[in-house]
Length: 288
Ligand SMILES: CCCCCCCCCCCCC/C=C/C(=O)SCCNC(=O)CCNC(=O)[C@H](O)C(C)(C)COP(=O)(O)OP(=O)(O)OC[C@H]1O[C@@H](n2cnc3c(N)ncnc32)[C@H](O)[C@@H]1OP(=O)(O)O
Image (tube, rainbow, N blue to C red; front, side, top):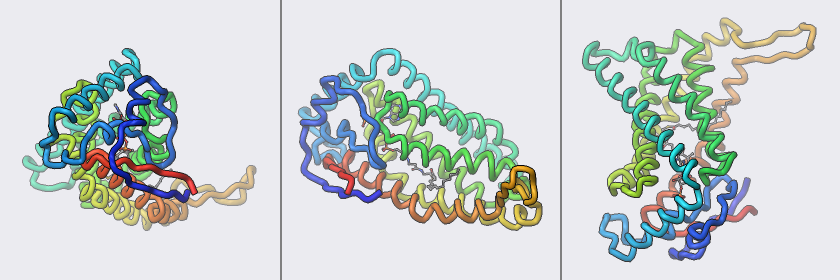
């Protein structure tokens, strides 16, 4: 999935096209949606964007609402508020647990229902992309959400002996901070009242939280390997009437290996988004 990325000086043409109502199209791995970028002049990193930029942002927001339609906007506001609230509840529960017990042991068990509910609910993000109410790439959202669902249901929920690993806390904290920031970013954006610090947090926290989260996930899968090998869980052995075999142990190894090509793509995608949104660069991406 090779691609050429060119960062150019900010320009408003594409943005104007979107504001005029051009439909959102499914995008390649990196979203090329110029929404924020075109609206923001490059002086924005320090939060001192001038009146012209604010007017431009306002026009952008009006265009975005028109493009989305009322029903989709209302739904997304509801969805993002619900998700922000859900992850906030999770954050509070984790802090309270640690303050009361002074250990991370038992933390996963105490928050697992809320985690499973809200992370599974996030499958709707793929639906949002598929039906075109958000311009995120289906592939980006798909990799992001499916790897989380996999971690929640097929690793941490299914393999009880690893639930007290420190690495579980690592990815839980990274996910929670990320999602509170991300969903509140979307909510305030849709309401046209985006505080600069939320925008800043959305496009800076990931620099640390993404590697921390991925490290937590990989270490957790690694910790699960001996148990999976010993029990043969989720594995199908030959001979059987379908003549099919599947080894969950090797599946986990392959999944771990797949982080090597996939994670850098997501990380560099976010770095490009950061340049676009915070520095006003327009990123033009072409398939090779
Ligand atoms: C079966 C097993 C499979 C296993 C596979 C294994 C391989 C996995 C390898 C990789 C693993 C990653 C694991 C992840 C770990 C973590 O999460 S660790 C914690 C740190 N994480 C992060 O920081 C996550 C960062 N990721 C994101 O922010 C996003 O999820 C994204 C999917 C990468 C997309 O970001 P981006 O391209 O910036 O797009 P969006 O933010 O989605 O925005 C594009 C436009 O769409 C609008 N929009 C999107 N969603 C909404 C919404 N819900 N409501 C309203 N609007 C939305 C958004 O505003 C943008 O609009 P414009 O401004 O108009 O462009």
